[in-house]
Length: 208
Image (cartoon, rainbow, N blue to C red; front, side, top):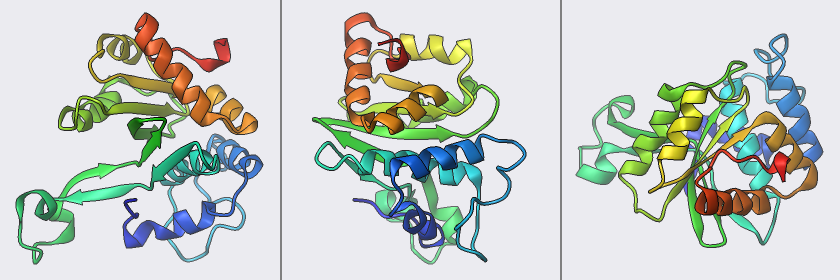
Protein backbone atom coordinates (compact mmCIF):
# COMPACT_ATOMS: atom_id res chain seq x y z
CA UNK A 1 0.00 0.00 0.00
CA UNK A 2 1.29 3.45 -0.92
CA UNK A 3 1.26 5.97 1.90
CA UNK A 4 0.27 9.64 1.65
CA UNK A 5 2.90 12.34 1.73
CA UNK A 6 3.90 13.29 5.32
CA UNK A 7 2.10 16.65 5.00
CA UNK A 8 -1.18 14.85 4.23
CA UNK A 9 -1.12 11.98 6.72
CA UNK A 10 -3.37 13.82 9.15
CA UNK A 11 -6.21 13.36 6.63
CA UNK A 12 -5.72 9.59 6.78
CA UNK A 13 -5.65 9.66 10.57
CA UNK A 14 -8.78 11.86 10.65
CA UNK A 15 -10.90 9.50 8.53
CA UNK A 16 -9.39 6.28 9.90
CA UNK A 17 -12.00 5.77 12.63
CA UNK A 18 -15.00 7.17 10.74
CA UNK A 19 -18.01 5.02 9.97
CA UNK A 20 -20.19 5.40 6.88
CA UNK A 21 -22.65 7.75 8.58
CA UNK A 22 -19.85 10.14 9.46
CA UNK A 23 -18.44 9.98 5.94
CA UNK A 24 -21.85 10.94 4.55
CA UNK A 25 -21.97 13.84 7.01
CA UNK A 26 -18.60 15.08 5.78
CA UNK A 27 -19.75 14.86 2.16
CA UNK A 28 -22.72 17.01 3.14
CA UNK A 29 -20.27 19.46 4.75
CA UNK A 30 -17.95 19.80 1.75
CA UNK A 31 -20.93 19.87 -0.61
CA UNK A 32 -22.28 22.97 1.14
CA UNK A 33 -20.68 26.15 -0.31
CA UNK A 34 -21.37 28.00 2.95
CA UNK A 35 -19.38 25.50 5.04
CA UNK A 36 -16.87 23.78 2.82
CA UNK A 37 -14.04 26.29 3.21
CA UNK A 38 -13.88 25.55 6.94
CA UNK A 39 -12.92 22.11 8.24
CA UNK A 40 -15.61 19.88 9.72
CA UNK A 41 -15.85 19.49 13.51
CA UNK A 42 -13.01 17.43 14.94
CA UNK A 43 -10.52 18.15 12.17
CA UNK A 44 -7.08 18.65 13.76
CA UNK A 45 -6.33 22.32 14.36
CA UNK A 46 -3.20 23.96 13.02
CA UNK A 47 -2.84 21.57 10.10
CA UNK A 48 -3.55 22.12 6.41
CA UNK A 49 -7.13 21.66 5.23
CA UNK A 50 -8.67 21.49 1.77
CA UNK A 51 -12.14 20.18 1.05
CA UNK A 52 -10.97 18.59 -2.19
CA UNK A 53 -8.24 16.68 -0.41
CA UNK A 54 -10.64 15.55 2.32
CA UNK A 55 -13.01 14.26 -0.38
CA UNK A 56 -10.28 11.94 -1.68
CA UNK A 57 -9.77 10.40 1.75
CA UNK A 58 -13.53 10.08 2.34
CA UNK A 59 -13.95 8.03 -0.84
CA UNK A 60 -11.04 5.74 -0.01
CA UNK A 61 -12.19 5.26 3.59
CA UNK A 62 -15.62 4.24 2.24
CA UNK A 63 -14.00 1.38 0.34
CA UNK A 64 -11.63 0.52 3.17
CA UNK A 65 -14.49 -0.02 5.62
CA UNK A 66 -15.74 -2.90 3.46
CA UNK A 67 -13.25 -5.35 4.96
CA UNK A 68 -12.74 -8.41 2.79
CA UNK A 69 -13.98 -6.72 -0.37
CA UNK A 70 -11.53 -3.98 -1.31
CA UNK A 71 -7.98 -2.87 -0.59
CA UNK A 72 -6.99 0.74 -1.05
CA UNK A 73 -3.92 2.90 -1.47
CA UNK A 74 -4.17 6.39 0.00
CA UNK A 75 -3.41 9.45 -2.19
CA UNK A 76 0.27 9.40 -3.12
CA UNK A 77 2.92 11.14 -5.18
CA UNK A 78 5.24 9.52 -7.71
CA UNK A 79 8.58 11.29 -8.04
CA UNK A 80 10.87 11.45 -11.05
CA UNK A 81 13.65 9.68 -9.13
CA UNK A 82 11.43 6.62 -8.65
CA UNK A 83 11.15 6.24 -12.42
CA UNK A 84 14.23 7.88 -13.89
CA UNK A 85 16.81 8.10 -11.12
CA UNK A 86 16.70 11.89 -10.74
CA UNK A 87 19.01 12.95 -7.86
CA UNK A 88 17.14 13.29 -4.59
CA UNK A 89 18.83 16.62 -3.90
CA UNK A 90 16.40 18.25 -6.33
CA UNK A 91 13.56 20.19 -4.68
CA UNK A 92 10.64 17.87 -3.83
CA UNK A 93 8.13 19.95 -5.79
CA UNK A 94 10.30 19.84 -8.89
CA UNK A 95 10.66 16.07 -8.49
CA UNK A 96 6.90 15.44 -8.67
CA UNK A 97 5.95 13.32 -11.69
CA UNK A 98 2.36 12.37 -10.82
CA UNK A 99 -0.06 13.02 -8.01
CA UNK A 100 -2.56 10.18 -7.68
CA UNK A 101 -5.78 10.53 -5.67
CA UNK A 102 -5.51 6.89 -4.63
CA UNK A 103 -6.37 3.43 -5.90
CA UNK A 104 -8.88 0.68 -5.17
CA UNK A 105 -8.22 -3.02 -5.65
CA UNK A 106 -11.34 -5.22 -5.76
CA UNK A 107 -12.12 -8.69 -7.20
CA UNK A 108 -9.12 -8.67 -9.51
CA UNK A 109 -9.63 -5.08 -10.69
CA UNK A 110 -7.22 -2.25 -9.96
CA UNK A 111 -8.68 1.23 -10.34
CA UNK A 112 -6.78 4.52 -10.26
CA UNK A 113 -9.11 7.18 -8.90
CA UNK A 114 -9.63 10.89 -9.48
CA UNK A 115 -11.84 12.92 -7.14
CA UNK A 116 -13.41 16.31 -7.85
CA UNK A 117 -15.26 18.14 -5.08
CA UNK A 118 -16.40 21.11 -7.20
CA UNK A 119 -20.01 22.20 -6.77
CA UNK A 120 -20.16 22.54 -10.56
CA UNK A 121 -20.13 19.69 -13.08
CA UNK A 122 -16.60 18.48 -13.85
CA UNK A 123 -15.52 19.03 -17.42
CA UNK A 124 -13.41 17.10 -19.91
CA UNK A 125 -10.14 18.77 -18.88
CA UNK A 126 -10.44 17.29 -15.40
CA UNK A 127 -11.44 13.89 -16.78
CA UNK A 128 -8.52 13.90 -19.24
CA UNK A 129 -6.06 14.01 -16.33
CA UNK A 130 -7.18 10.53 -15.31
CA UNK A 131 -6.99 9.34 -18.91
CA UNK A 132 -3.37 10.51 -18.90
CA UNK A 133 -2.58 8.52 -15.76
CA UNK A 134 -4.05 5.37 -17.29
CA UNK A 135 -2.16 5.83 -20.56
CA UNK A 136 1.10 4.74 -18.94
CA UNK A 137 -0.36 1.86 -16.94
CA UNK A 138 -1.13 -1.76 -17.86
CA UNK A 139 -4.15 -2.30 -20.07
CA UNK A 140 -5.90 -4.17 -17.26
CA UNK A 141 -5.99 -1.04 -15.08
CA UNK A 142 -9.22 0.96 -15.01
CA UNK A 143 -10.17 4.38 -13.67
CA UNK A 144 -12.87 5.72 -11.36
CA UNK A 145 -13.89 9.37 -11.54
CA UNK A 146 -15.78 10.69 -8.49
CA UNK A 147 -17.45 14.05 -9.16
CA UNK A 148 -19.40 15.66 -6.33
CA UNK A 149 -21.02 18.14 -8.72
CA UNK A 150 -21.64 15.61 -11.49
CA UNK A 151 -20.07 15.70 -14.95
CA UNK A 152 -20.71 17.45 -18.25
CA UNK A 153 -21.98 15.72 -21.38
CA UNK A 154 -18.47 15.90 -22.84
CA UNK A 155 -17.19 13.74 -19.97
CA UNK A 156 -19.97 11.19 -20.50
CA UNK A 157 -19.17 11.02 -24.21
CA UNK A 158 -15.43 10.64 -23.53
CA UNK A 159 -16.12 7.89 -20.99
CA UNK A 160 -18.23 5.94 -23.48
CA UNK A 161 -15.58 6.23 -26.21
CA UNK A 162 -12.74 5.15 -23.91
CA UNK A 163 -13.31 1.39 -24.14
CA UNK A 164 -9.73 0.11 -23.78
CA UNK A 165 -9.34 1.32 -20.18
CA UNK A 166 -12.83 2.17 -18.91
CA UNK A 167 -13.29 5.01 -16.43
CA UNK A 168 -16.29 4.46 -14.16
CA UNK A 169 -18.08 7.74 -13.44
CA UNK A 170 -19.68 8.38 -10.02
CA UNK A 171 -21.87 11.31 -8.93
CA UNK A 172 -22.84 12.51 -5.46
CA UNK A 173 -26.11 10.58 -5.16
CA UNK A 174 -24.44 7.33 -6.15
CA UNK A 175 -21.58 7.89 -3.69
CA UNK A 176 -23.92 8.69 -0.81
CA UNK A 177 -26.19 5.72 -1.54
CA UNK A 178 -23.15 3.44 -1.75
CA UNK A 179 -21.87 4.69 1.59
CA UNK A 180 -25.29 4.37 3.23
CA UNK A 181 -25.60 0.77 2.01
CA UNK A 182 -21.95 -0.07 2.65
CA UNK A 183 -21.63 -1.52 -0.85
CA UNK A 184 -19.28 0.71 -2.84
CA UNK A 185 -17.26 -2.35 -3.90
CA UNK A 186 -20.34 -4.18 -5.19
CA UNK A 187 -21.40 -1.05 -7.08
CA UNK A 188 -17.94 -0.80 -8.59
CA UNK A 189 -18.30 -4.32 -9.97
CA UNK A 190 -21.80 -3.65 -11.33
CA UNK A 191 -20.60 -0.48 -13.02
CA UNK A 192 -17.70 -2.39 -14.57
CA UNK A 193 -20.08 -5.07 -15.81
CA UNK A 194 -22.27 -2.46 -17.49
CA UNK A 195 -19.21 -0.86 -19.05
CA UNK A 196 -18.34 -4.27 -20.51
CA UNK A 197 -21.87 -5.30 -21.53
CA UNK A 198 -23.25 -2.08 -23.01
CA UNK A 199 -20.26 0.25 -23.20
CA UNK A 200 -21.60 2.70 -20.62
CA UNK A 201 -19.06 3.30 -17.80
CA UNK A 202 -21.09 6.29 -16.63
CA UNK A 203 -24.07 4.00 -15.90
CA UNK A 204 -25.37 4.73 -12.42
CA UNK A 205 -26.21 2.08 -9.83
CA UNK A 206 -29.02 4.43 -8.74
CA UNK A 207 -30.77 3.22 -11.92
CA UNK A 208 -30.30 -0.42 -10.89
